[in-house]
Image (tube, rainbow, N blue to C red; front, side, top):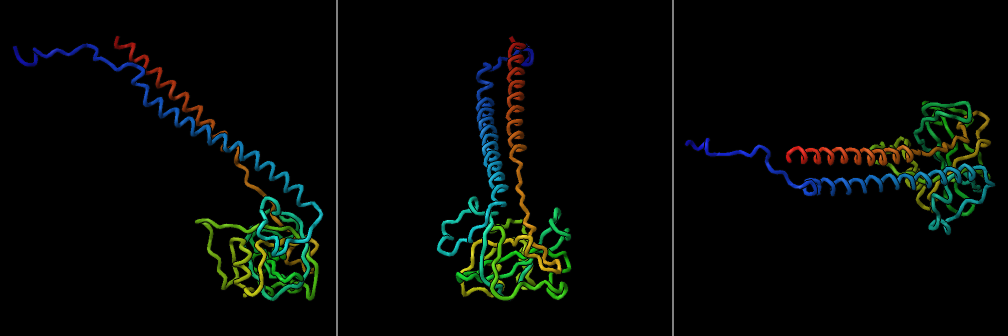
Length: 266
């Protein structure tokens, strides 16, 4: 008898119990399901917060203006409470201006497209400086010499506009070019410092002028605050909950397949 003929192979090799075969896949599925449901619920909560914020801002922009908060109040300011709120300041414009790149797609005035918001330092009667967005100019018209009649008013004036928060760049944001006065992120104190305003307090916010402050020449075109909020939270919530449902279906199909496999070897 040869060694090969003495070896016997069972027709149906033994299989592990179904519970053991499903244990670790089930653990992984439960953990993944919990994560997906948590992410979906978080997006639902963010959606409620964003809708409330949009409602508050839409109401806020039409409110009566209040005096802009001074240095004694800056420590307690929050973007949620102040962004887009109408405020007033009294004082006079200082020399210099810089340019914040923007594409204006839904203008309130005559000019649109790629261009710049013109920012100028404004020293208030309370002794601090606020960077004022005087309005939009089309690309190629950012320099004062190519837009006659666009100089800021001389002497003491009272301004009204919307309080705007600072922005924060990310890894994709272009670096500012202070030497040329071109900026891609709204950073009030850095902008002021690039114009040599370093000897007085600078407000941690900027002011977007109301439309009535547009000069007779038409530039800079004031009143062009972009009131917009990215609101993809519903889409994200549906995505996470959808993935959770797919995970349940896939695990159910896998468990059914393992159950059938166990019955086939009996």
